[in-house]
Structures are given as structure tokens and as C-alpha cells.
Length: 144
Image (cartoon, rainbow, N blue to C red; front, side, top):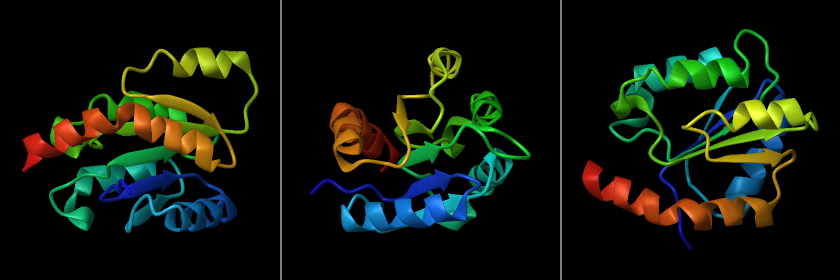
């Protein structure tokens, strides 16, 4: 089974974070899961970098609607981060939003790889992982 070093969940709903942690653990996607309640917490976490050593999370699952800093604001700030602070490979937006304008806005961010509905479903997550796994492996090789 392919496994990431770590995943960062960014959502202001503690129940969603709890459920997604259970899913990711059960699906054996990673052994290490970090959470942030909003985009600013996630940005601070990435900028501090000591919490996860030399390797940023391999995947970020990001909500759109959050207080303090929403998902789109996080993506704008994320693009300004140094490459060493960014996630290694997959950035996915997880949302309950059915608004086409949200999907269109999300498609404009170069660092966003996927747009999925909440709650997370194993099949949709595995498709995203399969799609980006080769890119992930190449990034891991250059970081060693």
C-alpha cells in the first residue's frame, strides 16, 4: 500500500477532522495526520516547519469556508511560501459547496490538484492519489 509521510487536514469543523482522521487511518494512507482549524493555522504550521521535521505534509485536504482565513485565501498565501515549506505533492479542496463559482475559482490555483466533496470518500481519494503518485515519488527522491 502506498503511504504518505503525513497529511494536513484544514477544516474548522472538529467533527469532520475527526471523521477524516479515522478514514485516513483506516485506509492506511498515512501514519501521521496534522489538523488546522483555518487557513491561517495551516499557514503558520507550514511556516514553522519544525513540527514535521524536514518533510512538509505530502497531502493537504482543505475546506473552503472557514473563519479567520478561508480556503481560497490560504491558497493565495500558500503560493507565496518558499518551496521548502510547501506540501510535497497533493493539495485537494474538500467542500460541501455545490456552487459552480467555487469550482471555477478553485480551478485558477496552480497549487490545487483536486476539488472533492465532503465527507471524504475512499474511491475519490484513491483516484487522486493514483493520479499524482508518480509526481510524489519524484519529489521525494529530490528531497533525499
